[in-house]
Structures are given as structure tokens and as C-alpha cells.
Image 1 (tube, helix red, strand yellow):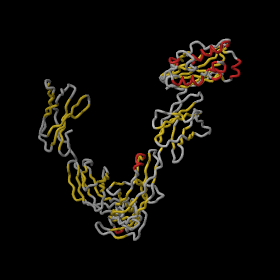
Image 2: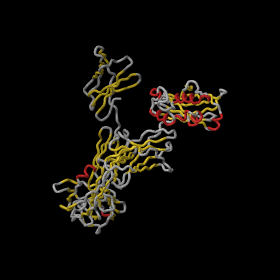
Image 3: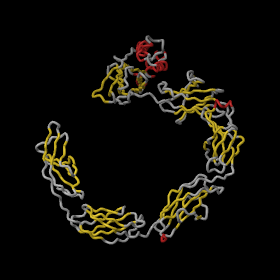
Image 4: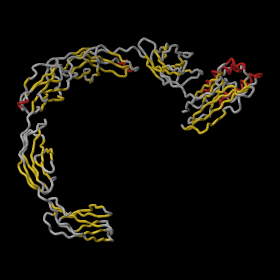
Length: 632
């Protein structure tokens, strides 16, 4: 797109206006003061195009191009001939009054310009022609460049009298057209008004978009300050489809782009038929007869039945099925009575409604059972139960049971509309759980099934303390087992000594391997329930960890390289020490150690495949026992 750029010289005696078309740029200039201009003697005009950027990047130096070559000059003694020649150059002429029309008029918009402003009477008076605005057409503009146009007016002294710069306007926006059609009234057309246009041309076509005709010989003008222009189409069609489009007329007298084509159907008056033979089959199904007249079917886009609980409420679509006698539908859940209304939508998307019908069945179906959201018991024994509302429910009822799998009894002794309930229990009874159930009732007191829910009681009594059952030295540490406490959520093992320890444990056993060798430690246990109640401490247990000694070290291994297979073999000696589980092979290279493999307790060799030992590299072997001792 050709970009906009504006700049003005210090002398601004002429107004430059620009406009871009699909393949051309139109430049027009008008004197600021026609009276002073009439007293001057014009020696000529020159028009230059200045390129300031290309492909979105500013040029280091401006590129100037003179569109008209030499300045356009007139001989005031022979105004008609010279004016005709100028109009030929700037394309202000009527077809047939110049040569090479097809070559010069390469743009349909330029033809409209020449017809509007190059009437023959302009050629008879040079000053009048200039006052009405001369112009130039630039056919060499490119879409990837930004331009500035400069006009210079030369006087008889050869000095520039006035200069004016102007940027480039893009094509004007496309007008927006909407159509409004009401029964018994003319079609109303609404145009979103733009200050760029002073008038609008509205065209209409009937039954085909190929034969548009203007609604008026003169443009429609928005005489108010409103942002909308309303036009009434008095040419009423009896039937069929009408198409409309609009374009704007700017101050140059030029047409802008056409709007999108909109259409409307001219339809006869439509009456939506009423529902007949409406009756219930059972508690969940009803039937009726309803059909549109055959002559209306070609004019209708969609049709159906909607329902509501009241005439003045919003109607919702009803799912209906065809049967041998007419139509049938399922009763809407939760409704004690319904209003049914037929409707249809014509080709213009206008809705038409038929008479409303009323139906009230004998209701014996209860609502759905409530869904309980949350139960909670606080520290003072207040229980709160919340549940979701049920469609069609008018009341709710609460039941309670103190034990699982027992019959619930009515606890609320009343019906209530709220979706929550508060109860109070005695925490001293130390109930683990209390059980509730909620039911929903409709306006006819049909009661739903019970929806049970369990609520954990807030516990204020700590669990009994655990007791150590046994202990055993395993490897480097002691393994403990203790009794489980009723209602305990977890246990805490406390260790006193050189390194104190307090660990939360979910199970009833633990293996302590973190104590110092030879250290003496005292252990005891506490139990904690889900409400953070902590039991008393268990009996204490004092133990001493034995001093751990290292097992014999492994002598330096022997290494052999197999250059042909590129393997390295490592051999070592070690006595049959009891409890040895495996050997670990380490490679020492550049001051760093890394494990390269392991060997079983009965193995004394290891093959390092695809590796040849270098002189600066060494191997180290470490033996490990089942109890975690090593030969380091």
C-alpha cells in the first residue's frame, strides 16, 4: 500500500490534494486565493514526485522525478488552444475531443474524472479552469514506495511564486450498508456516514445482481450531524428478492468503492399456525398437532416449538419428534406446568410466533436427588452440610444417622428452600463419623431419593501412646517395630543423644542408620491423629551403636591390554572374607575417580570392553559387605 506522508513549505499559496486508485495516483491543486491569482501572469507549472522510502525503509537521499518533464505553460493570447493542450496532458477532457483516448485513459476512475471536470466550457476560460482545479495522473507509482508530491508555480520573472507539498491518501473506506424491512412499510436502508463523503449513490437490482439501477438520479446527502444516513426505498416489489449496494461521492466528485451487496426478500404476510389437540400421554410425554401451510414452506428457513414456565419469561427450544398422529415431546424436567409457543423464521431472518398454549399434567414424578458438595465439623461441634440446587425442587429435607448402614431419621422436622443446613453434635461422645441424607421436594411434595453423605467428627481427644514391640541390629543401625495406635494419622520417632532426631513416620517400623558409630541414644514414640491431637510419649528405649570397623582392603590390581580386540582386563586377589557381597571397580585418570563396573563376590576379574589403559591411568578395587561395610 502507498503510505501517507505530509510536509508543507513556508509558502503555501496552493492546496494539493491526492488520491490513490487501483493503478494510478491523482494529484489536484487549487489556488488559496483565486482573486490574487487572477492578477498574476502564470509562466507555468511543474510537478515533482519525491520518493522518501522504499520497502518500509527511509532513503538516505530523496529521489526526485518531474512528472510533466518541462513546466506546463500557457500563452494568454491563445488561451483556448493552450488550455486544450494542457487538458490533454492532464486528462481533463471529454472523450472524442482529443486523440489517443484509449491509450491515455487506462483507468476507469480517470474517465469519470475527465467527464466530471473537463467539460468544454472549462476550455474557453483558462483562469476559470485553473480555479476549478487542474490535476495530474501519475501512472508510474509503485506500491512499495512512499511519495511526497511538490507543485511549483513559475511567474514571468522565472521565480517560484508558491510551492506546496502533499502526501498520498489511500482509497477511502468501503461504506457499510444494512437493510431493515418491516411489515406494511417501505424498505429502510442504513448507511454508516463518513465525513470523507458528501453524498452517496445507492443502487438496486431485482432477482439478479447483474442489473443494478440507481434509486435516484442525484446522490443522497446526509443533512444532519448523525453518523447514519437513512434512505427509504419507495419502489416496492410485490415479491421476490432485492439486492442493494452503495458507494460514496467525495469532494472531488469521485465515486469510492462499492459496499458489499446485501439482499432482502419481499415476502407476503406470514401467520404461524397454532398448536392443536395438546394432551398428556403419561407423566413424561405429551402429543399435539401442528403444521405450517404448504404455501409458506418455500418462505421459511426454520420452525419449531419453544416452552417456558410463564408467558413473560424467556422461551427455550423444545425437542420434538414426528409420530403418526402429529408431534410428541418429553416433559421438561422440574416443570409443574409449561407454556408452548410455535414459531418460524422467514428468509429475512424475521421471527413469527403463533398463539401460546398452556399444559399442566398430573405430576407424580419427584425431582432428582440433591448432590452434596461439602460436609464439615468444626472444633466446637457445629456441622455444616451444603448441596447443589435441584431443578424443579421447591423444598429440601434433612435426615441423620449416627451409624453406617442404619435407617436415617428426620432431623430437620421442616421443609426449607436453602441449599445448606447447620447441625450441632456432642464431641465428647467421640463419634468418628456422623451420617446425613438430603432429599428434594417439588411444589406437589413429591420427594426424591435420599442422597447420603458422611461427615468426619472433629476429634479433641488424642490417640493412645504407641509402645515398642522389638528391635534388632541390622547392618549399620537398629530396626524398630512398635504397636499401632487407634485413630493415629502418623507417628513421630524421637531420638535423644549426640544427634537428636524427630521423624514423622506413616508405618509402624523404622530402620535407623544415621547414628554415630559407638554412640548411645534414647528413643521414644508419640502418635498424632488427623486433628493434630498428640498422644503421650511411649516408654523410652536406650541403645548403643557398635563401633564399625572396615574390612580388609583389596591389593593393587593387575591390568592387561588386548590391543587386537581393544579390551582391558583387570585382575585382583582377595581372601574369602565372610559377608562380602560385591566389588566396585574405579578408574583413576587425571586426578579423578569414576566407577566403571562391579563384580560379584566370587569374581576376581573384570573386562573393560573397547578400552585400552594408558600409562597415567590406574584401577582401584573396593569390597563391600551385605551390612554396608567397605574396604576403603
